[in-house]
Every structure is written in structure tokens, then in C-alpha cells.
Length: 147
Image 1: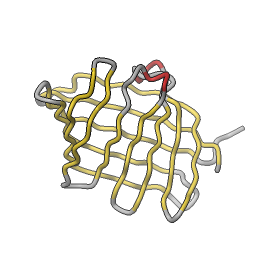
Image 2: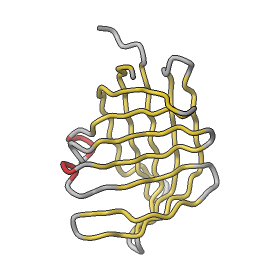
Image 3: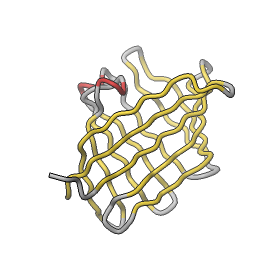
């Protein structure tokens, strides 16, 4: 397991306009197990789910994002991304569970052998019958941070 620095940018679009964007830098961990790459970090106040532990798993052409934690206010979720595929799951909130569907539009996995590089995901989300949005997440990883 090695220490890394991540720059995470999240975007949300409604229609053709970017409605919301958040960017933060945080420390994290990078490790490999059974041919899969894992990136783990703690969410900040900026993400809206402070204290939540997020784990990103890279497994071939699939990326999974798992958010869990008692400090996350009950907003636990698991999302799986594979270009062109639909993923259905339950999104747990403090107000009860909601059905969620994710449709992956694009994945970029440009990590080098040291774990540095960029991961990008563009996806559509429909939660219950309430909202349909297009989202993006970009994770820039420095696996050799300056001390």
C-alpha cells in the first residue's frame, strides 16, 4: 500500500448546462490485489459527505465506486461503471432507500505502472423517479507525492 495525492473533480449537468462542480485535493492510499487496483480516500466537507470512506476499484474495463461510513450521514452507495452498461442499485439515505440506475457513457483509465495518472467517468444517473442527471468524475492521482 502506498500513499498518494488525489485531485478529484466532480461535475453534474442538467440539460446542457453545468449546474454543479466541486474540486478538492486529498491524501489517499493505492494498492493492488488479485490483479485489481484499489484507490481509497476519505471524503471532505466539499463533497457533502465528510468522513465517508470511498474506495475505487479498477478491474479490467470496469470501475466500481463504493462509499461507506458511519460519518457519511447515511448516504452509502455502490456504483459500477462499464461503458454502455446499466447498473441498478439501492442508494441509502437518512430518509430511506431510493432506487438508483447508472448508465456509463465513457471511461478513461490512464494510470501508469506506478499508479499515477487520470481516471475519468461520465455517467447518467436516475434516482427513483425524481431526477435524471449527467455526471462526471475526474480523479488525478500522484503516486509519487513530494514529501
